[in-house]
Image 1 (cartoon, one colour):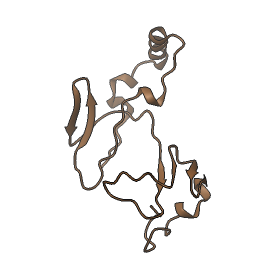
Image 2 (tube, rainbow, N blue to C red):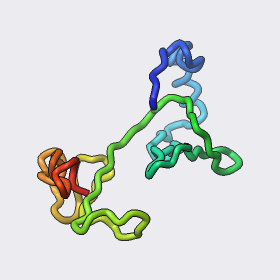
Image 3 (spheres, one colour):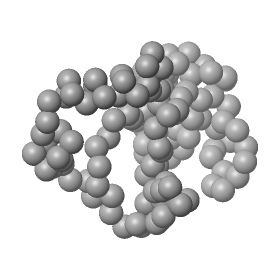
Length: 128
């Protein structure tokens, strides 16, 4: 269960943001931080209760994580024959950002009939 804490809880957010931005600019020059530069922590699936968190020594497993979400993406995927749990079959249609689907059927995700509640087999949820 996610909880939201007040900004005052995080020491990094209690100072002037301009100071942090200046330090980052001095260290990075004209380079930019992109989503690929950030560590990724994904939501545990399939009844798994622990998060897998990257560390300097490798990966660590923990029941709780505390931090600041700096980037989030709502990826989408659709398999015509249904998602095979643990399988390696690529989706027929997918979108990294959840905006435009590539493949079959492809197109704008927000208006796709397969991205509407009730489109799943049996009418519960969205089609996979």
